[in-house]
Amino acid sequence: MSPPPLSGLAVASLVLSLLVCLAPLGLVLGIVALVRIPRTGRRGKGLAIAGTAVGGVVVVLTALLLVIGGARFTAWTEEGGSLFGARGPQAGTLFDLKAGDCFAPAGGLFSAQEGEDLRMADPSVEIVPCDGPHPAQVYGTFRLEGDHAISDPAAIAAQAFEGCTPLLHDFAPDTWTLPDVEFSFYYPESVSGTGGDRTVRCWLGTEAGLPEASLRQEPGTWDAGQLAYLKAMRPSDGAWFSVPEQVDTDLAAATAWAGRMAEGGAESAKLLRAVDGLPGRARGPVIALANRLDALSGIQRSASRATTRAEFDKRWDGDEDASGEEWEARLALGLPVEDEGEDGGEPQG
Image (cartoon, rainbow, N blue to C red):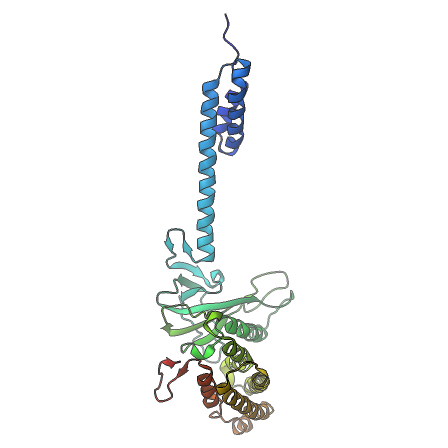
């Protein structure tokens, strides 16, 4: 008497289960074979069991690897670390940097040539954890506007100044409390109309090294009145941070900056007067700061119209600022201030 025929489903189940990409199909065929074999009387129950078991194991292992791989990728790309620990130092270039990254440059943070913008010449960097020693941290990136070719480094640098300033205030709304740092950026010297890197990378840095912590500030740090004040001060602070390297040697750069200072100060004065919800003790100091910014705006606007360096220096008094009024306003609002009696004193609340 001839043996019963072998189940084709059982054979197919085992064969397909051994092929990783077809293991799910092998698992399904194994289950179907186990259901049909008792009804049909065919041989191959052992093959069907083996195919089901192998297919199930392969499917489970594949799913587990995908989950672990996705978690590791997310941890690496979003959190700056790995699944099993913080990311250590990594060799890279400026083009690998993203907002929040801390890094150490290979050739120094700033150009050594007098009169140049603060632009790194060597793109090699080491990306390092922010909770360790680091000379610089990226606070934002943006792309140069337009799809046309730009070959003038001065035009690109102007866009860099304009684009980096608001990103700084998004990253650290209270610039007053930042350590003594340089405001800098890296930009391509020229870009074509058909492609190429158009990304400007903005960072804070100092050759002496930053504190061993991220400089990013979280909005939950301040109450509504403090946030409104900081928002109102953004135009004035932004103009101040846009000071060009050539301010002492280039009349055109100096007068342009004076114009930005005048506009920023006047805008901040207007916004300060419109702030609602300030505590009673802060209203007077805030208005006094607004008045001071308006007065300085007039001086700065006059300096921006100077036609000679001597005329600019005469109109612009470098000792004129609003630091005293700003100190009083911040103190009344409960924002950190430095002790005026100590040079480089610790911020006080």
